[in-house]
Image (cartoon, rainbow, N blue to C red; front, side):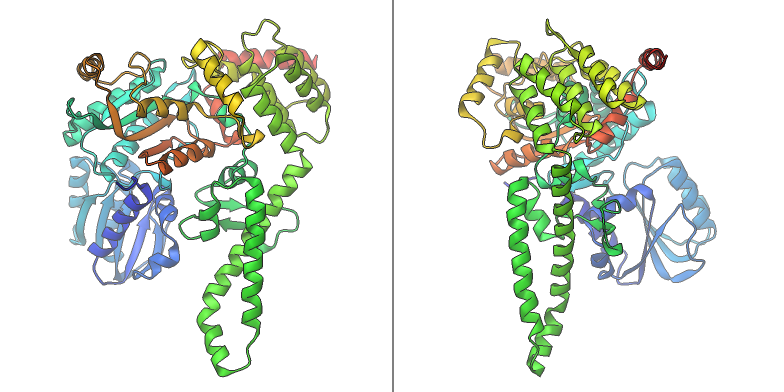
Length: 583
């Protein structure tokens, strides 16, 4: 059985749109969000080969008259886009319009468009469910940087957008039935699960799986607040490292801040579908990347030598035939050598290996006195960035929240004394315990609360790790492991329907384990590339898992996410603390 693949799902919709339009010259009209959706799965050069010669945004004024072109309008069904289409159809500049919405569109909106189409230019109006970003074959995002409103609750508009995105995902994968399970300790997870279930039931007659079918699709909804540790850690696999230290946005990496960067490399595309080296090394660790980049360089030098030997007409012919591949290889080499060099510079300059080793020790082993001394020493080290001190303080706050000898305030004082952390960073330290502290969590995040968890941690310690910088295992992997074995507790992760829950409970009591054949995970508050790596490794072992969330976070974006949802009372208290320090 092949793995479920969100990139293929979105590409198939785009292919169908282009094919439905026929062999005419085409223009592709998108909005801001659908432009990102398309760019994640298709290179512009590849679309050009399909007779799509113009790319326009519906919210930006474009060319005046293009009657010889057919417009493929690929849009989210928002009020703004409907109104923009109405204006377009009243004064059509294209010869014909093929309109595709990424999600369900209201009948009233269809009627509005029909009334505006006085020139009868519209040929097709369809719903093609590609309302999410397909990042890797097993990884998707709704591209919502900040999910929480004050007090870590839903904003109604974002709840609706999230439901639309998940509906679109399920329908693009041809799912007509699934069991929806959610994290019981999160009111946001419960609200999303209920709203998703009721909307699917109403819109597409979505059904629950046959209780006798022990192979099911399960949608698992989890709140990021259950594991605030993972987004705090430094990363050491290629994709995750680039995002953490430089930043990846819609497969684009901004290198303009790299010392001595050339103009053509200020922004580069990192798309595993079109970049073989990147695709092969997404999950390689930093040491492996250095070796592999050397191999890439040697391959390029060999090609360069053969290209420089032009001594006959035949050599010229071979050169012309191979030049596009040679130029592409040259660009690939330049891009990855630049990125790996910059990663290496940052790692060395800011002593990130030492920082990361301390992070891992703190989270996975955690001798309290040793951890405190290490953090104090790193606080005083001028080579360590403020943001990495912030990581360590945040990890300490979560790890030792209820420790009898908690020294968080002492460490924070030391940081202020030697660092002068910014107001934003101090606010974050106030907010992180409210966000992901023990009073919210139901999981034993550090394997310290039950004999079983302590034993599991002890066994992991005996086995040892191949890499001291990769000891941490995200909570989401443990949850999925339990789900695959039919061991994830209904009391902690119930089903939306109590009737289904009772049926599954009966099956369990009869000794029959309900195991999913496919798992689709959605994390409210975003996911990380570290979690993506672990899911990919599980899929390699023949699991069928999709991971997604509101956003793909690095530490910088996670700080903003936490602060955006922080209670106003916490901000006031933090401001008062800052004022007293200044006095």
